[in-house]
Length: 86
Image (cartoon, rainbow, N blue to C red):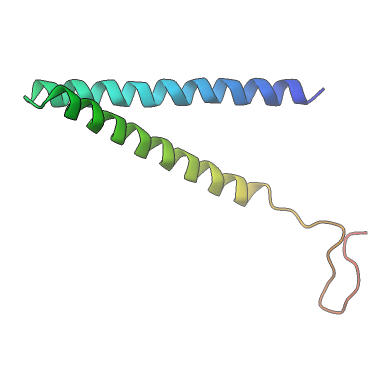
């Protein structure tokens, strides 16, 4: 039952990611073109900026996930060899 909302959230976040990269690409390309740059160079600059933003978002998401979803399993033992949390 929980797989539906998780799948929907993943799909929605993917759409927002594509839109965000597209917006950054378009704005950067437009700004570079107005400055007199070659259209291909403008596009590649926008693409590069969009991918840098996307990789930063992925790293931020990984850090948030690592910090919030860490938990100790029942199989862990303390320093004296006894099981914890059982």
